[in-house]
Length: 164
Image (cartoon, rainbow, N blue to C red; front, side):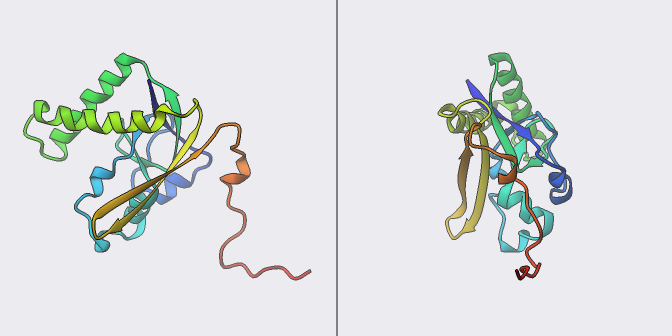
């Protein structure tokens, strides 16, 4: 079975997210966090977390890039319990028995997303808030296609072009 781990190509996540995920921690989409959001919530670092952040399941911080990785059954079971506990502690689920099916669905969705991709495939997420709620789109960058310059941003958007 495959899931995804948080990866960092540079230090930018430390600057763009209130709470960045730790490199190497398991991650899921975490779109449930935004289910009750409106346009007024989409400002600053919260907007960045909404627009492009995966949710680390250990720290519950956000990360821009994740990579497909094999997960062992006992690791998966531990994540399931940890996520269910998070739903009780943070989202007010009445019990672990109630939270467990929701946690199971979140992990299953991520496992399904990763299932058809080779290890080390990099994934990104793009979220939009529309009339029907949160919409997520995913991009996959195969390990052999990924080059550092695909992730590096050179210059700034407000630079004037150089005349030659």
